[in-house]
Length: 157
Image (cartoon, rainbow, N blue to C red; front, side, top):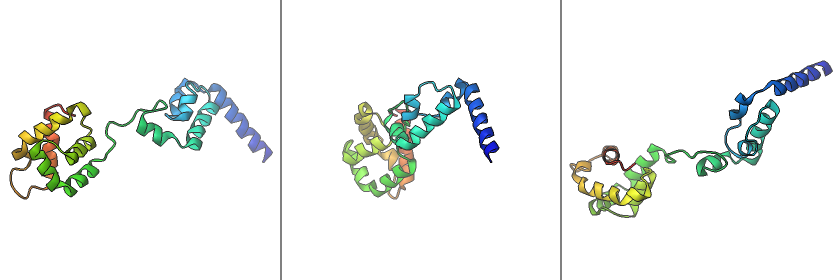
């Protein structure tokens, strides 16, 4: 038993000594990756990952873009957008006809429309209302597909 522990410890030490900067990306972003900028040994890699685990900060860092993490471009799942749109479709249709409104701003935010493009987003939807809702009974998914197409074609995303 003692020999097994000794062999394991020796193997770990040799691995740590021979590890290269190729392991630097193993930690990921978060406090561990931020605190240990260039970990060049297995021990430092394990320590960095352990720091991330103990501090439980990686999720916040990814969401907020802190501690060397990059936030995802889209924080909201497309299903959530569809659910929101379906639940608020009547109100959104009224606001699209006006070119502005609180629900429309929420939709723009969920679709990751930059703040400086939101007024143009409202105007674009207002001027293309008949394309989004060509007839009564349009399903939420169809209308949302049209809105996404318009946002993309007008370079609003």
